[in-house]
Image 1 (cartoon, rainbow, N blue to C red):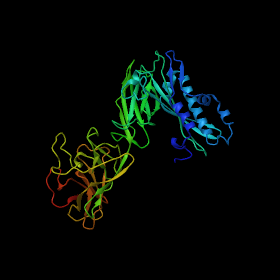
Image 2: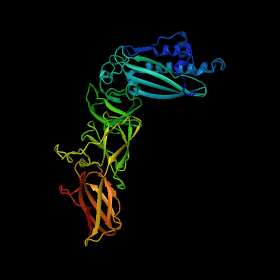
Image 3: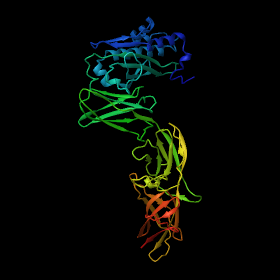
Image 4: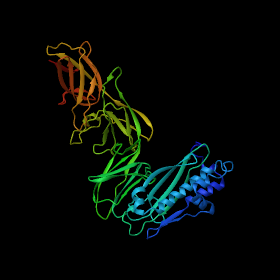
Length: 460
């Protein structure tokens, strides 16, 4: 049935009210070559009256006869007025200030109406998005849609009206500019409501909110290098960035249409370190996920201590492992080669990620026993122990893992990621370090020699 404060489904409208709004939606308008705005909306005398009747006169209608219809009438009038204003605004000013999505509110009779205007480039005689194909640089036609919603104690359905506008042939805004399509994926829809901020050295910042086509269009730019930053609450890019940037050089006399930036609502992977029974995981762990779309390494590492990874819904999902260096990956290779570090180790299962959903996944941890002793070989109980990854291609900042303190016999065992580690033990003023390579088969020296028993750290 829908929320009565935000309207009800179209199927519940009376035939008369449904027909009135449909007439507005069928409207089209064209701006002549001289730049004069002409709204060509095919409507009946009723709808024309709604546009022309002042709002104050609409309020005079009897409450008893139009208890639920008054809001519809006011909304239709506001939508029509919004299109009239768009057509009457000089095109260069309109495309500079109003491209994308803008919102305003108006209070009438104690009811707050929200007017949403969406502006997008379309081809001649078309209602489809031309931002991706680059037609924004040449079509010189924009589609304008005004949608009005409201909140009141009565019932009402959001009202929309649309038209198209063409600038004068000599209009300059389409000759020099930048267009950035923001889409949910290669076959996805445009991202509506994303904020795109354009900056350049010595040039004022401009901000556009994308409309239904997902296009951010910035006309009338001075030649130079520009950076567009995109943001939307809960969205991430293909490279797992919440605020991705795209840079481009804009020359004189051309409009640059950038390749689409893919930006979608994130999904969440909830990662748990999987350890042998009774083994305590290290603290401050990092977790990584892999996908060939992630550049340049093919994997992404979340900040240390993060257990819920906010990820783009890439096809194929994400194999997940603990650690953030090349040698943390069970499928890692020797730097500069294709030689596997851990031959025969299976690839972690790929966890699917869907927008707005949370999926649990485990990452394998491996035992690291540490024996802390004095220079005389006596066990050191209660020593504080930590480890820092020292392998190749580690993400920055490099994580520091907290290991379990040593017990009464000077020994403590912790679950850690694969890879080369520098282990540090401290006990009061005493401090010592040792290096180790944690592999699926057990502990080795950094040179690859197996270590029998625990890693020994001497605190002199």
